Every structure is written in C-alpha cells, then in structure tokens.
Image 1 (cartoon, rainbow, N blue to C red):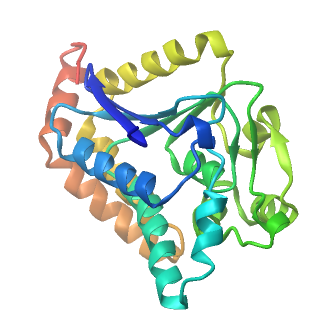
Image 2 (cartoon, one colour):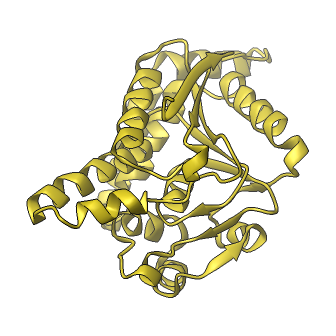
Length: 257
C-alpha cells in the first residue's frame, strides 16, 4: 500500500496520507513521498492549490514510534540526516509558492500537529485534538518549534511544547493553529469550495510572492523588513498578473484567475 495517494482535479492537487493502520504516522517513506508529491504539484502548471488530507480516523499521529525506537541505535550523524529529512519537508511546505490547505478529519499530534500547523490554511472537525506530546515520552518537539513560534508566538508555543498538553479543536482555533472548524459531514465540501475559490479568486503570482515575503520577514529589522517589502512591491507592479488585475478592476470587469 502506497503511504501517500496523489490526484488532481479542477487545478487542485490532493495529497492523502495513507497509513490509516498506523494513524498516518510519519516514517521515512511517507516523508519522502510527501516531498516528491509537493515538488510534483509545484512543477505542474495545471495545479494552483494543494490540499493535504488523510485516510482513516486520525489525521497524523506524528513520528512512527516503532521507527523512532529503531533509530535510537543509529549514530548521531545518521540521526541528524534522518531529522534533516523531516526538516526539509517542513521547510518545503512553508516556502512552497502554492498555498496548502489542511483538511483535518481527526487528531493531529506531535509531528502531525506540526504538519497541520505549517499549512497555509486549515479546516478541522470539532472532535479533532491537537498537541505536541514529545516531552511526555522523553523526546523534543524540535523541528516544529521553528515554525510554531512564527505562527502563534513564543508564549503559546511554550505553553504547548513544554506541557505536551492535548487541546480541543476550539482551543486550537483560538490559539491560531486552526483557521476554520467545520462539521465532519461538511468538511470535504467546504475544503473543496475554499480551494476552488483560491484558484479562481487569487493571482498565483501574487500568492507566491506573498508567501516568499512572509517567510523572510521574521527576524529582520524594521528597516530591512521595509526594504524587502518595497522591493517586493516594485517587482509585483511589473508582473503580468498585476497589469491584468488592475486593468480588469478599472474596466469594472470580473477577473477569473
């Protein structure tokens, strides 16, 4: 059984975690498949939005603990390479020019919660639970911390990462981990409708430039941030999408991207 399913429809690429018997836990094969699928979707001119979803009751339970136990026999360099594999996946998702929408139908824990949090948008069912439980088993939520602090701030990140607490979806939404709570019966249709709206209602060039800007801003000084913003602004004015969009607006024409 393939650890990841991939298909496209209506300019949307669907990546489906497919290890339901393991609660879609992350192992090297699944991480590799995700990286390859993301690259494939990014290179496909017919794809504008990516939806990340899962089969089974859980969205993703984090690292496969059986695999992690085996990795304890590895050398430091071997473990560093394996950790770097996951870090590359998270960085790829964070910096990918195309938006990623998470469809969270079940619990997202540890690395699985990190996977969901790195997506640009997230829809979750009210019954889903979220948390970074690594400290409860003597592990460290290391890689996700670099992204979580950016997403929800250091205070909330400390609260979740140091306690290992599992929180309900409503609280995850209040913390900024989840954008929208949707009843299970409506989840797929809501995600699909949202993804289609992104396809037709936003410029792909603008979204890519905005994602690149947001990825670079944290850590920059105010003058450096404004310099980068001004450069991005100037570059955007010369794009075909900007010319087309402004022209349509002034002509009072509805534009379909």
